[in-house]
Image (cartoon, rainbow, N blue to C red):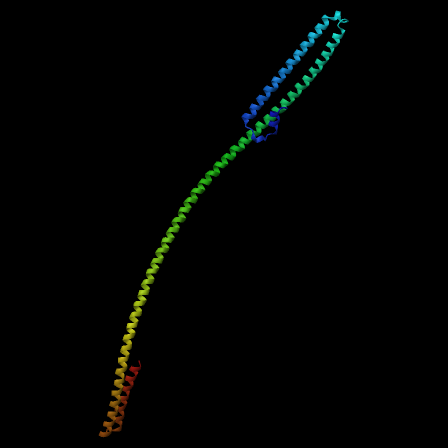
Length: 250
């Protein structure tokens, strides 16, 4: 078996193309056919030589005694040719058996190659489907990213707007509180001033009422006013003084 045949047998099955396998089968078939034809030609030539030698031996049968040595040589050559013929036949059968084995192996490889091609086509279709889904996923992912970015920007804008409005409200509240504090301080100052004036007026009224009561008692004693009338007058002045004190406390 030559190196090409041995290499073919040791190669991985899936690594062959169908055309290469068929080309190899055709080449191998041509080689073995040529060898068979050559062996058949050699066999025919050997038979022809044997026939010629036999004819020559018959022609020289009368000279058998004279050519006994040559006849023995011829017989020896015939025996060698017979052995060569048997060897050639055996080699021919071996070549035919090997060719049959190689043909069966090539057919099996061709079938496996066809199956692998079908599987490869299925894988290619699956790959195209996966690539299509991947493309759709990338497109959807880009769309979702755009939506998320838009939502993020809107949220940031809303947050900035809310913060601005909150800052504006805080400023207005601070201004309103400051204004109320100023108004309260102004009212407090006015109330304190009014209280001071009221306290001063109350003190003056108390003083006048006390003086009036003292004068009334003095006048009553001088004029001999009846006790009952003097008591009523004193009670009235005391009541007025009590009202003044009550208002002053308020």
